[in-house]
Length: 393
Image 1: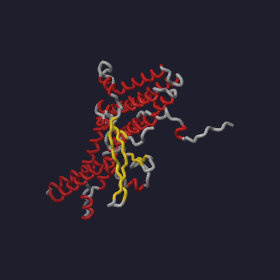
Image 2: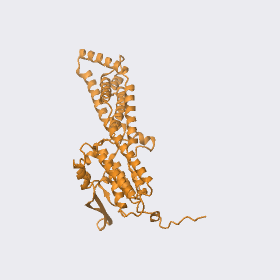
Image 3: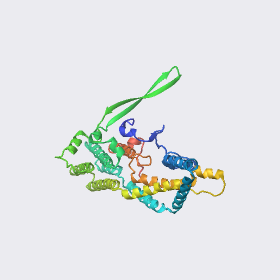
Image 4: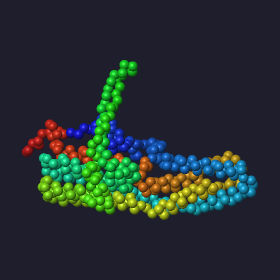
């Protein structure tokens, strides 16, 4: 059995936490809770998106009001009022709803398509393991190589589209060295000063084979063995297909039909990897993004200057309108928040909190592959030793 305390370097990236009973919790769930808790939530909230722009907007609005009341002369105030009324009229006539609605719906639909296109590895690994004949001497080695190549293909695919993952694995050598393992040992001692037992963890590091072996890296870097124009994910997929072919030729399957099923699953996995790259690289037209950004920020500049000067003598109301940009700022920041949501969906593999956590996906795939490997050598009685055979009627 594998030591459950072993954690690879992938496991240090995840925001998931383990509870005392060994179960895994996902911290800061974006859903659930009462209406008040959701409304007052700060992390990944609309307040976190707009507070910097809101502060700059309010300060600029107040400075313009101070400029009008205390700096400009009478002629300057007249010109200011004419310009403010002109901007006020245009702020009511500009309608960004259609443009923002089209932009947001396009980006959200694209994000949804990308999420359902992200490939998985659990189905193919499980199918391959359960297709093999039990008790093969080379079975564990074949399964280890198959599952590792599947994870390697997934990582190589997302290195092309995800900058945070590309930072962790900038080259093939980093994938070869990704097998550093950490084992923790709890150590307890009695402290007479505090009259209590104090515990800490002692960590030891050692190296183990990573996602890529040295021989595999040399094959991928050798131009005589591998074409420089072939993407790295396709190279590893070819290795997997050759492994399936060898498994079939040496009669390691339960049935011959299992070979075709495994090939179909791998080809579907290859297609999902290709679709992920296609969705990420064929991005939305920059002209559309530029047009939306310029329209929203231009509308914000217009609302900064737009003012309605009352003819009534109301000092308190005039001061509130002059120094608190409530109504113009509210309309602008509704549009601005809408723009932020659309921009977040344009590049879902970035570093923002709302982006897809690819590093956590890598961790989950590695954990799944390590867990599924044990299916080949384990039996149901290993889990339930007292399991009795069903009584035949």
